Length: 226
Length: 187
Image (cartoon, rainbow over all chains, first blue to last red; front, side, top):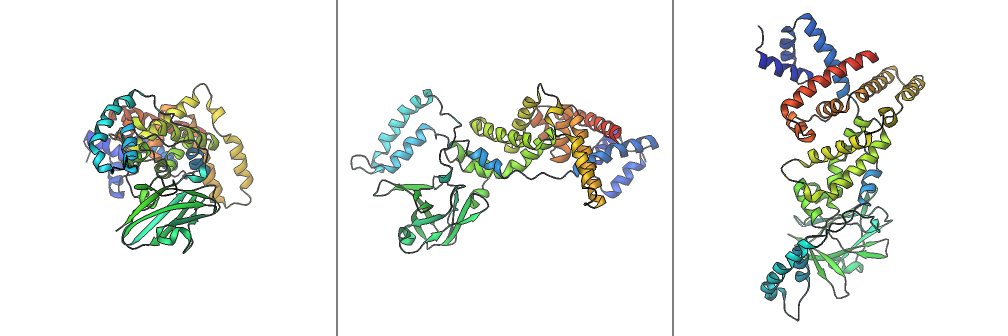
């Protein structure tokens, strides 16, 4: 039985893509004359070889090369104002009381931000060691903390759950070339934390959902364990 | 990162735009194999593919604010990658860009004594296929790579190449015919 043209066109497409079942394939080929049969075969054969080409492994250095060539984007101006207001008490007032004033301020300043030149999108990152990835949101009494730190030799986690390192040392384990992780069992609640790189440099986690200023002028990340 | 790995592309893009640069590492991890392999098969040269992949991801990051969630992020990346590859190829012969396939074939013959016969045959066939691919005009090569290596749909190819779906079908047909002829001549 001869296939209708539309069906035949579809069958040709699917044959070339190797998507016909064995039965469909036999049925399709039985509808071809000897010349068409030969043509279909000689076209399909190199295509199958093309599909068998092995996938090349991505060079290990690619991600590092890119990540050290880009800089964090500057959040939109209203978001920066909001973040600043959330972190600072003004004249002894808590932020809640300042909400109306902040809204007015943001409306006025948004116009100014739109006229400001955009930040340079790409720059060489000066300190690839302090690149923090993110922390897993707390769930079921566990939290996973991660840090992207290709130049680090060791990474420790400090926070109010371990007396900021005085009670117990929590070290992150290296996964691959640059990623450091640790999972901790934590009781429900909010915890402040930071990372210490090579026992020298304390950094916060810019991927954290929240940050608070501590009494020493540092910014701590905050995680909520449910 | 584990958390971020579970998040869809559009949320990670929003994080990048909000200043969380490490969200981009997750996006890269997700899409770098596709980008690198498309470029490798397109130019047939390892170093050039790595350089082009780097340029692609940096350009994508710079232009991230222009990305519209109307298309898939992978489609958009692929568009950028192929544009960069075409830019690089402009003004150069493909022999300048591609690996020296003849010396590669000689290398394979050298391996013959220590490698099982079927593996040598397979490597030689791969080299022949890559060679045929590199001899195709750019517009046919890219459509075959997207269709047969990345298994993109006609709709996705039409978005990447800026063609109608009908044009993709026609171009794919012609690309297959030419690929068959080039490959047959090599044998």
